[in-house]
Image 1 (cartoon, helix red, strand yellow):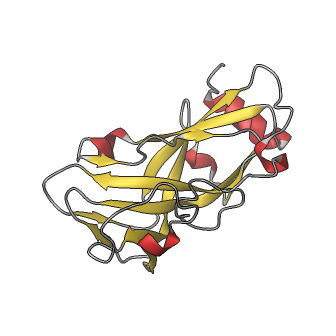
Image 2: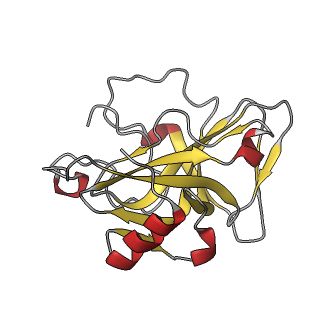
Length: 185
């Protein structure tokens, strides 16, 4: 699977195989598209629950959503994890897939943007949920609108026979904000 260059990304957007909304051509990098942090932060309710049961289908009761206005910040404490979403929605055709990667400037401060779920299936659309953790020993201010991650676009060897938007159990399709785990659904 070949990684798309800036030229390939611009062509895929022009062809409608890749959609980014809102789109700013300045976010296209040599081999990726910069994505910014949205305004919603899904935080864990520490102290309210003593265990996570991975056999449960819905884990939304473990978290709550905090809305942060533009210009304000969310303070992420050391060793903590939160779910956030990209401000931009992305849509991939059946012959494209993507990967979320952190920005090195954040990694150099100890901020991980995703833990393991960086793959974006062909046929996906919506905002992308980010699993942001603070691995440093200092609190970090996170500001909505900050370019926090990048999406790498790749060709599939052949188009997906059943892209994500056609799957019956596509549990994270058309996300509007950071989604809680739907493990087991």
